[in-house]
Length: 253
Ligand code: G
Ligand code: G
Ligand code: MN
Ligand code: NA
Image (cartoon, helix red, strand yellow):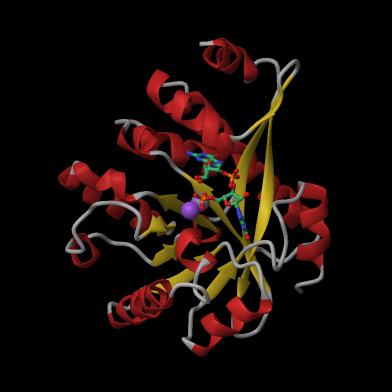
């Protein structure tokens, strides 16, 4: 309850910010983009994790204005980096199911792209499997986003309860292997098998794969051997400020 009251005021009080975590091409080691992640600093309670407040925002509907804010902020920042001489890199934004299911979602996205001048081809939406529940509407919204030129990835892949059949009917580009699988690849042979199998399956379906939660060189080498396309995690960088991210982007040209 206390969090909910705080959450209602957080946007107008400017308590949110967006941090960015680099996403790396496993083959070349180059940074090809970044995931935008929201952070909340509450004046009394201090930093509150999105794992704690995003579920409340989703229940209360506050995720709608908050989600729009994150998308605007990430696009605005992307344009800003470009103006500062960075090569255009891809920004991945988490979209919650509630946001995605709004009837005017496409309209909101179109407006934000127009206002910020970001090319849709430099934007990726991370969606979770929960959007698949209303499959007719989801496919049509995804197709409209694809037609605009936005890429789509499935976040936390392997942790939901969806049937795999959506992989052949939904217009997605990338599977993002959940960090819980990567964490144990050397301690649990079953996790290693799952990761290898997800990569092979994705490639057989013409999808790219990004691994998240990569913390060690050994994990990266494991992924490289299995031709995982991209990786993200503390091994490369923690989520960092827009200014720190600019330094990394400027070195990629
Ligand atoms: O950044 P961190 O790893 O603490 O994020 C915890 C969870 O919160 C992750 O599941 C992440 O996807 C989610 N999250 C972070 N930022 C956003 C955001 O801007 N929108 C949504 N919907 N979820 C986010
Ligand atoms: O669900 P989503 O993929 O959006 O979650 C991203 C979350 O994972 C972020 O909150 C980020 O802080 C966290 N994260 C990113 N890289 C690592 C990592 O290498 N190890 C761990 N433990 N968490 C990570
Ligand atoms: Mn994500
Ligand atoms: Na995830």
